[in-house]
Length: 236
Image 1 (cartoon, rainbow, N blue to C red):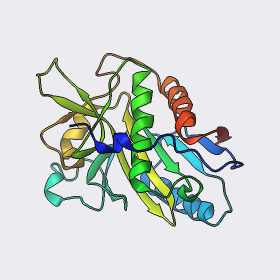
Image 2 (image 1 turned 135 degrees about the vertical axis):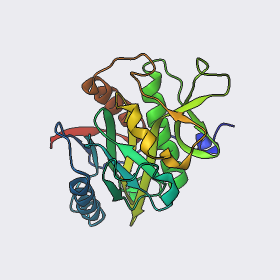
Image 3 (image 1 turned 180 degrees about the vertical axis):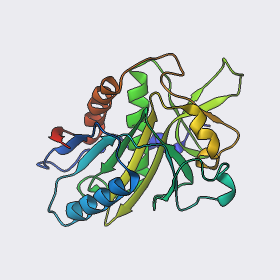
Image 4 (image 1 turned 90 degrees about the horizontal axis):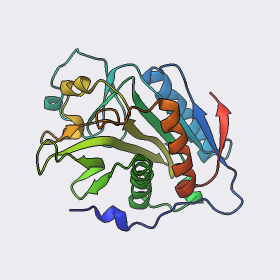
């Protein structure tokens, strides 16, 4: 069943006169603790009115993160990669090279302080990005994220191509989304991704779209601006 979040009002533009969102891209792999500390600091500064909103695009070295609902039994291969407590909602997630992570730090008070609408807007961002490549990404009632049907594997098979995990403090968001561009899909087998064992994972390359990360970033930025408003490039 298609998720009711699809009914959420989109776009989620800021109040008139708001400054553009900083658009930051890191080329080198970013250690997870470093990223988490930077997000915490930036979100606090945004809430205090001391910094602009920010989207930070990066890749991590191979690792697993545990959300607030993570079950120990879903860590299938302990010791395979480092495991970090994330503080975001959700369960276990894999991050690694070839996966575009976008940490989204927005002041929802400037938009609409409504978590359902915000998650729906993030999903729409990912779905419209995939549509650029003629990939039909879909929402589901019982699971957050973006899914693609895999009729080549079977009539009811679906794979996850993008994940969403957020946290909000003083109505400023942090954490965000991840889109599988060309990660090593075998790395996901060390966990039960997002606690869902009956479905698999896929990527743009796995679906037959050999695109580069800069190409994906350009599409992400254009689709982000249509939903969340203007951005401005800022050096990492």
